[in-house]
Length: 401
Image (cartoon, rainbow, N blue to C red; front, side, top):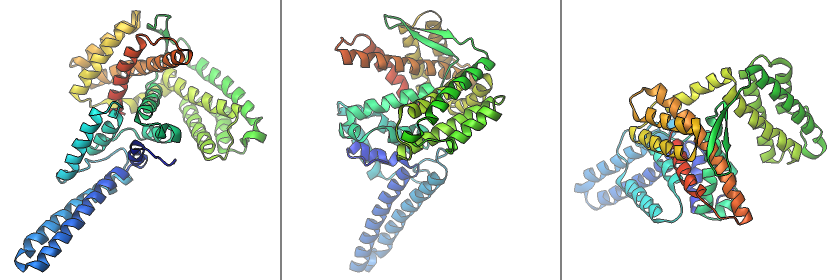
């Protein structure tokens, strides 16, 4: 993990280990316990008559520490299944007051601190953000970006979240953008066999090209990632879920070895990693068997939507209909109505999954368009307003994954 230098980066280093936030609270409680114990001892030595009361105060402080430490221990062995940070006792008033003051300070700042607020309150409420997303944020933001300040960091976090949600909620379709910046959707027409055949043709090409880079990258047929991919090519063509799993494992191995410097960055190896990522997304979006397995995971994360949040998401989906046309516009409204009505958890989960995934793919497109405008000096038009709305959806989705 890189050394983080800004206050926000220092705060975020806690997110790179599931138990750190809870342990930090535990250590704060421990410090309070030590202070209480010291005060108790001073009082006891000064006046025997006050000893009992002082000892009780120290014991209470020690109990607070024990409760926090228990929560931290649970968190460290069960990431993603956390209990409330202060589940057995009330949050210490000093910590609560400090957090409220910090939130007020951030709210008055021009920079966007919403991610940090959502991250910490997720820990407090026993519903932490998705660990894979947190890990991507922690490892993909560079030292230079941390040093550039919270405005730059907030934008990079948003970019990573948008990409994460677009990949986590893929659809069997293509989102198109016309010259006026209005979006439409085109359904995928490939059958399952065509999807697998195309993936393997592309995999054969990109894998063989990467192998030729051995002298410059270090990647070879002895690599575990290669063994996964070659086994998949030879033995797993009729098992799409195995194809999906092996591609993911190979990509993670290659990314890890590139990050540690064991493999050198070389164009064909980077292209292979990128291709593996695209194949994962396509399988989850377009292949019925892989999609079904993936939907089980997604639905689990969407089963219990807070009503206020559900209605907020519905409002944003409905507004997106004004930036889209034809079928896409209609379905944004329909999904919003589904979230606003009592249609059952399954239907609401499907609505969030469909329009949530679409919104994040539109966000990727809008961000690319805005980057192009900034690069060539063009005026930034209505896309800026659309991006603000899309960012709001990203923020709402972040509490679900």
